[in-house]
Length: 73
Image (tube, rainbow, N blue to C red; front, side, top):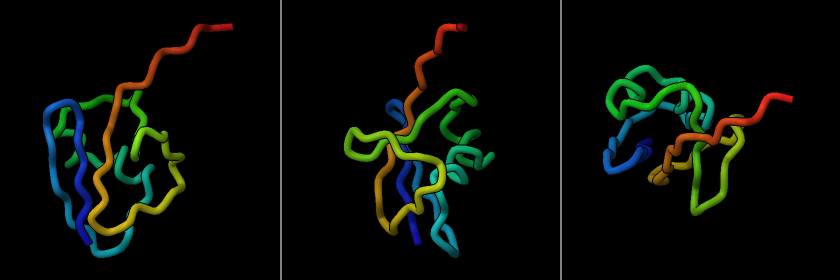
């Protein structure tokens, strides 16, 4: 199974033996090193932010965006 991941103008296609979750993609060290994003990111599909426990389908293109900082309360 293959998943396309984009961060800014950079894009990577990664192969997996089983369907990964969004959380696994966000924390994957190979993807993070190739695209250069940090810890404070969110994964978006068609403009909708996905929670970490959602399973990613074959051939989907996910967009990683930097998440906005929150004000301390």
